[in-house]
Image (cartoon, rainbow, N blue to C red; front, side, top):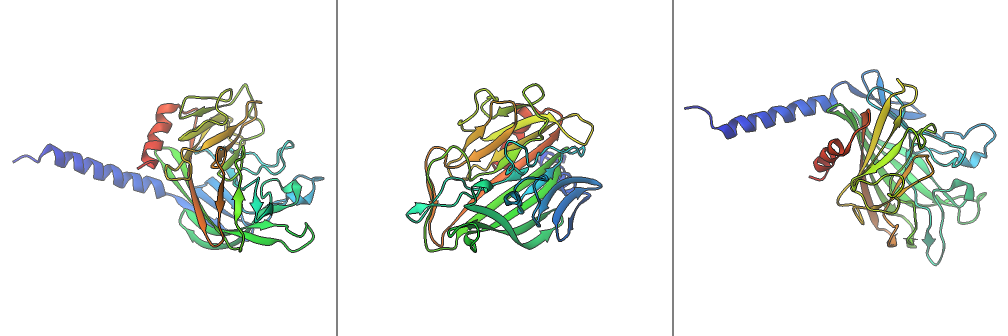
Length: 318
């Protein structure tokens, strides 16, 4: 008796899954130093997370020193697809997240995003765990409640997990944060146009002529701001590589608060992106309570269209 067709199909699925798992972890490794954690595929880097503070350019206020972020991220061929410390926003640092407009108790709360306002910041606290191609770290969201010269207050203690893979020709990065309010007062996030969710700054060379956005709803830099999107892709020339285009797609997990979240994009030619879970309606973290947000970043060589990214979204949505 010949095997049933369904057995052939099952075998093919199992084989494909096995090959995918091998491909995802093959040649991936992690290097940890006192300054950073870097994940690579063979000799090609995928991402670097900064344990130690990274200073801004010479002559810029040291308030912009920052730890606890990812820069650079790389396309599969090795080119860099992130920008850091642009002159228009020195606090933009590759891939990061922070709350902007807050209330703490009954008073105006810290701005953890805009370091120049000197009311708050985020810092790396410790490495909790490392894996073959990923890591979990503890970060602290600090408020300068008594002024910049006084000891800051840890308001949120955060567990951030980052895991990388190489899947069907693309670098795939899973980014999950759980933030716990470790104080006795509520941290409230009034509705605001940006902040909170994952943020991304592209290389400074990306402009109106060589880059653009594409959302899951088919929108671009001219009409995507403040819309909802399951995913947003941005393309432009990777730096320090072959100079060819690369695509960075950021996917919002379907179980995130307010998913599919509203987005912040720019129409001035530069590429900045932010998923904003409080763009339409406020939110809060009550004392002793936690929230979790998850995102996936998929980085392709070349300019990827809707079909390729939608396939990745469907896999993430399972």
